[in-house]
Amino acid sequence: MVNTKTTVKEIGFTHEDFAALLDKYDYHFSPGDVVAGTVFSIEPRGALIDIGAKTAAYIPIQEMSINRVENPEEVLQSNETREFFILTDENEDGQLTLSIRRIEYMRAWERVRQLQAEDATVRSQVFATNRGGALVRIEGLRGFIPGSHISTRKPKEELVAEELPLKFLEVDEDRNRLVLSHRRALVERKMNRLEVGEVVIGTVRGIKPYGAFIDIGGVSGLLHISEISHDHIDTPHSVFNVNDEVKVMIIDLDAERGRISLSTKQLEPEPGAMVKNRELVYEKAEEMAAKFREKMLAQKQAKAGIAIPVDAIDSDELSDEILEDVPSAMEEDLPEETTAVVTEATPEATPEAATEAVTEATPEATPEPVTEATPEPVTEATPEATLEVSAEIPPTVE
Picture 1 (cartoon, rainbow, N blue to C red):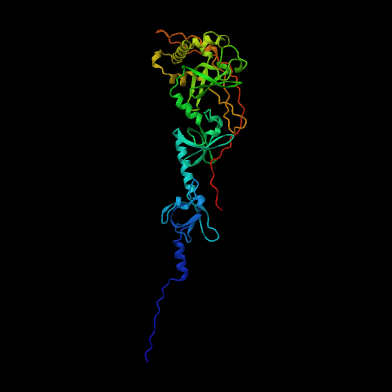
Picture 2 (picture 1 turned 120 degrees about the vertical axis):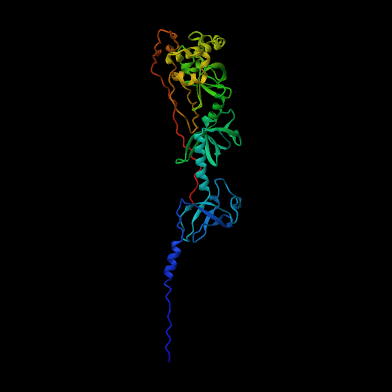
C-alpha cells in the first residue's frame, strides 16, 4: 500500500492581517478638515454624503448655506461632488456631521478683508433696522451700520430694502464684527469734487457745544466753535440756529476718516464780523478765501525755503502738507439709544499768529521758516459709548 502525503501550503494571511490592511487604508477625519464628498442621498432636512469614511456623513439643512435654505435641493443635487467642512466628530453611530456654511463663512471673511484693504465701496440693501442703526449683508455676512454713519434724512425704518453705498469701518473675524459706514462713502464721493480753500453754501443741521454741523450738498462738515469767529464764542447757539443757511470755507478734507472741517473765522474781513456783521462776511467770502490760499502758499514757501508759483500748487497738497494745525471735524454725537459713537477730542484752531505775513526770499539769503507759537489745544471730548456688533455666528451642531 502506498502512503500518499498531502501537503497543505500555508497562505500566511490571517483575519487579523486583513483587518490591519483595512485599517491601513481607512481615512481618519477630524473636525475642521475640508474634504471632498459625493451626495449619496437627499433627505427632507439634510443629506447623506460619501466622503470615504466607513459610514456616510450627514449634513443638516441649516449647514448647507450661509443663507437661509428651505429645501436641500436648492443647494445639493444627487451624485454631485463638492467640498465639505467637517463640523463635528463621529457620533455613537460613527457618523460625521458636515457643513458647507462654514466654508462659505471663511471665504466671505477673506473677501471682505480684501475689500477693506482695497478701501472699496460696496453696495448693499438694508434688510432690517434697530435702535442703534441698520443691518445689511456683505458677501453673505451680516454687517451693521451705526446710526451716526447713516447719512439720510429718511427715518431709519424707511431704509429697509433700500440699497446704500458703504465703506468698511471694522472687519474683525475673530470677534465677528463687521461695521460699515454710509456717511463715509458719501463723503468720499463728495470730497472728489471739493477743494481746501473753497467757499461753499450749506445749511445748519445740528448744533453741539463744540460746534455746528453743516450740510453741504448731502454730506456733513463740522464748523468747530474755534473756527466760527476771531472773537470769543460762548456757544454756537449764540451765532447759529438749525436750518440757517451759511457760507463757509473748507479748511480740511480727511477722506480716510470721512471728515470735512469748515471755517467762517477765516472769512472774516475784520475780527468778530461773524457776530457783528454776518452779511459783510458773506459778501467778502471769496476775497478772504483767496487771501487764505495765498497765506497758506506763502507759509509753504517759507517752510520749503524756495519760491513756488501759485498755479503749481493744488488743493490736495495744501490739505496734506500745510494744514497740519487746522482742527479736523469731530463725529456728530449720537442719540442716547444709539449703540455706537466715535469719539475724538478736537483741538483748538490754528492761532492768529499763523496769519502773519511771510518775508519773501531774496537772492542773497534764504529766510528761516516761520515759527508759529501754538497755544496748548483745548479739547472737548464727546461722550463715549460702546459698540457691540456681531456678524452672524453659525451655530455648532451637536
